[in-house]
Image 1: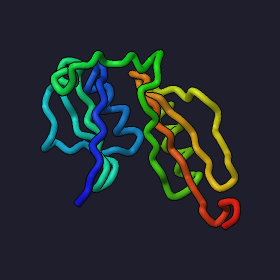
Image 2: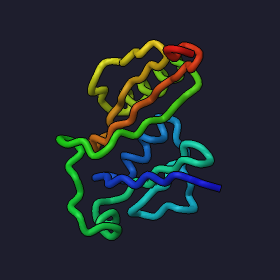
Image 3: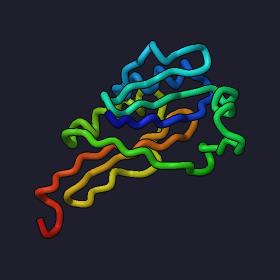
Image 4: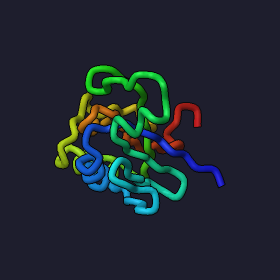
Length: 134
């Protein structure tokens, strides 16, 4: 089975865990300790949130300041535009920010939400029957 693990450096692991739980992630306690939490989006997608010290143990590069610089865009598809709005609204209520207004490409609508550390998540719904030329 193939899986994706996204590793993120965060300032406060417990605060970030609460944020991601509000977005709809579940916690996998098997891979948690005081310095890292495993957040589960689906059976194939996991996000490891780690203290800066723990994250540094996996790399010799400096950690990007994601509050002022983009290090990556992480996109999650959902089943409807209502679900996009629900997830992003929950993220905003949990203290996240929406750095840009919703984008509507006709066949795809997406909204962005940033966590406390500036990691940017794109939550999107795509209807391929509306894709140009479909």
